[in-house]
Structure formats: C-alpha cells, structure tokens
Amino acid sequence: MNSPKKRVFTAFFAGGCFWNVEKELSRVIGVKNTQVGYMKGSIYKPEWGIDDTGKSVKVETVKVDFYPQSKYPIILERFFKIHNPRSLDHQGNDKGSQYRGVVFYNSPKQKRDYELFIKKKKINTSSLRTVLLKANTFKIAEDFHQKYSFQKPCKNRKTENSGVFDRICKNNTQKAEPPKSGKYYTKGYRVGKMVGKYNCSCCGSPLYSSKDTYESGSGWPSFKEPIKRSFILLNERTNEIRCTQCGLHLGHRISETQKTLMYDCINSVCLNFVPNKSLRIKGGSTQRKRQFKSTISNDKYKELIKKKRMKKNLTKREKKQLKDTLFYKYCKCNLDFERKNENGYGICMHSIYKRRGFKSPSLKRGSRCKDIFKK
Image (cartoon, rainbow, N blue to C red; front, side, top):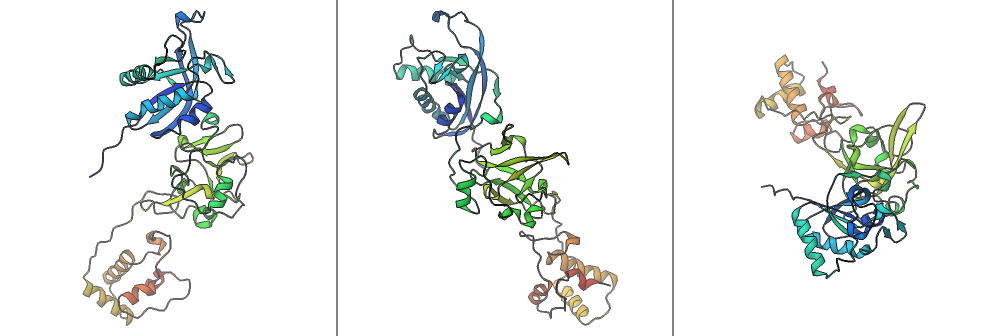
C-alpha cells in the first residue's frame, strides 16, 4: 500500500539581500527547497511618519518550502536571528526599501504562529520594524540569483570519482574534468545506447534524459536540453549550469554559431546515470518490450531443435515456431527484434543451446544469432 503524499508548506521571508537569507534558511532542518524572488507589498505604517505610506514596494524575498508544518516557528526564530527586526530599510551593508524586513504569511495559522512567536519572545512591537503582511504574487528572480553563495551538502553522494567531484562540482564555477576522461563520455552513453536518466550526483534530482544526448565531440557528455527547464539553473552571464535543487555546479552551455546550435556540456562526475528499463531502444523511445507467449510445448520445441541440428527439412510453420521461441524467449542480442538486456549486451547463442542440453551450432566470431536461421 502506497503511503500518502506529504504536503509541503510554503512561507515567504524578506530581510536584506536575499542571497544571505536563502543561505541561512536553507540550513534549517525541515526546509525542503528555497527560491529567491520579489514580492510587492505596502511595507510602511502611518505611525512611522514616512511620506511613502501606502506605496507598494518590490521587496527581495525568499520562498521557503518546508515539512512538517510544525517547523514554521523554528524557521521564524532563525529568520529573526539573521536580520535586525528594529532596523528600517537597512540590513548590514544593504540599504533601500527593497531590503525591508517582512514576514509574508500564507495561511491564518502562519499569522497566529507569528503573533504567538512575538508574544513568546517578548519583542517590543513599538520598536519593531519587521512587518507582517499577507503573501502576494511572488515573482521568481533570475537563475543567476538562485543559491548564489552556497551549495547544499550532499547526503548521499553517487559519483564515479569523489576526488574529482570535490574539485570540479563543489565550490567551482569555471573548472572542468579532463576531456574524454569521464565514464559517461564512453560511446554507449554518448550516443544514447544506454537508456535512462542522468541525475544530480549530489541530491539525486533528475536533470537529463538519454534521448537528448548530443555527439558534440567536445570531450564531455552533452545534451540538447534538460528534461525540464526548471530542473537546471542557467547563469546568462557566464553560461554556467547548476542543479536547481542543491546548487551543484554541473557544466556550461555551449553555443555553436556556425551550426546555430546550443547544447549543455556537463561534467561526468557531476552526474549519476539511472537506467530505465521501460526506455529500451536507442534514442529514448518509450516502446515497451514485446511479451513472449509460448505457442509450442517443451517437447515440441526439443523435437524442432533436434530436426534442425540433424539438418532435416522444416515446414514454414515449424521454422517460424522455432525462430520465435528462440528469439523471444532466450535471445537478447538480435537488434532486428530490439531485445537487449539491462546493460545493453547480447546473450551468446552458444549458451542458449548448452542450457537446453544440445550441441552448440558452429558460429563464426562476431556473427549474430540470426545467422542460424538463414534460408
């Protein structure tokens, strides 16, 4: 029985430059994801004696997704520690109305939790300049700003080389692994024969599909596009590509002006390939494997094999029965029938005959199983 899907709750906080606010709030246990952006709101109160009372201002805001709901007071406490709630339009070196301290609530419960928090901490509301407002339309900032100054820690790292991973994928924006050295630059992966998804080696988020592989000749795994645009962060200034979920450095977007083509050039150590059995054929087609249904008994099958070995003439129907049984039930290397095992390698016909207790037919080296059935 499948467990019910966990509901993720959302809250919004503004208190200075959103780079630092996002970095600090992402460390709170229970926070699943963060995004930076802008929220509009009337952030001045009449009693403050400011001429801009009632004016709607765009504030740098951090969107926080968290679970469970009981984590909200903990996030609130962390937020009040990282900004000055008594400072007006001034947080550290950041000055201006866009750096105002605001807590945007998404539900009546969040509003009650905020009021209870202020009462519990005995904060003097007369000197409080951080305001409580109802959440408005949140506009996500450019990719350049997302997870700008940090990367999330890797809890379950899955990479081919930890040393290269630490040097290239962590705390780096320009360096790349040596060309043609990565596991996923080998031909099977490079041309899309190995079918599946390429996930982030740090957080496991899906990034690219084997059907979008591109033979760029650059020396690094290349892809025409990600599975979804929202899965990656693209810095338009430097063309750096990062993981949306954890901020891990992945590679760069390359533009070939002569071919008017753009592709993502990714470091192999920053990826983790997960094979997909339902996507079998080259190019990522979703065609399912053909199911085998036996049309003859085991005794009949042995009889046909014996006649074939003794070079006796088989009827057209017997040839078809024998061919179908061998190929669909055992053989996985004949490309005509699109049968491969999980690793993309075929099973030799010799092993099939030996398994059934018959003398293996003579096959030349490199010949395919279909050669047995030549007319």
